Image 1 (cartoon, rainbow, N blue to C red):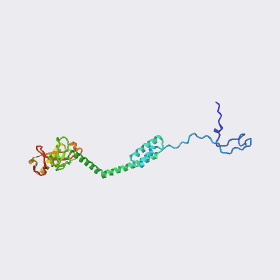
Image 2 (cartoon, one colour):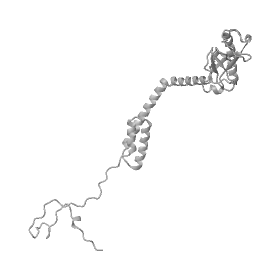
Image 3 (cartoon, helix red, strand yellow):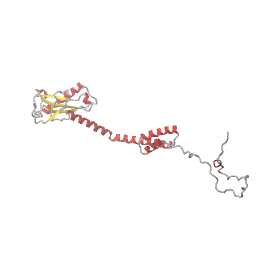
Image 4 (cartoon, helix red, strand yellow):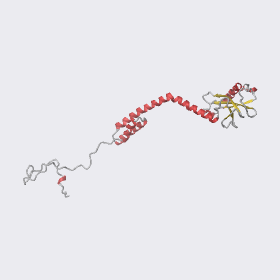
Length: 258
């Protein structure tokens, strides 16, 4: 194979002056001195020298969210960044670890704050919610009535329809003479609930009407929690006085001795 001619500019030694004709150290035959300028430059590398490994973006995100105190977020990002760095060889391990540490500290801080909040206001807040639910239920069912209120009961006592409050000065069906809240941790059962409601209403009747129930011309009706309404906070027994034949009442029965 024939070696192709080479351009001298691509093979010259960039660190030495060109050798004059006739041997080293001799002056050229025309008496000219060798060139004294800078040596010729050699070929340049086609690409820049490689820089260090790039920093993993997730590790940066871990550090930033850790500084912001976002609790579990930098914790998760830091762990993910360490896994990515181990696999890819990217830089940023220190940033990821810093994010994990800051995330752990902020998580502990938020946990303490939540615990303190729950300790100071948790109980009161729960009581307020329960009270609001109970009052709302009583408004819907009409069991918010108090002693002395007159009302119209539902046509079907088992329908769950609400008691309708009315003016005692107009004809009405019944009047509230007793209200009681059941004190029990769990629903006592239908029969036990009926017994408790009946005993309470019969005892309260004489004090309100002014005559014992057995000697009265009035009839007692009562409303008590069911197992379903108990589950939403209903604890109220409501006692009502009405006529035996269902005819309307025109005045209050309080102290009437009827």
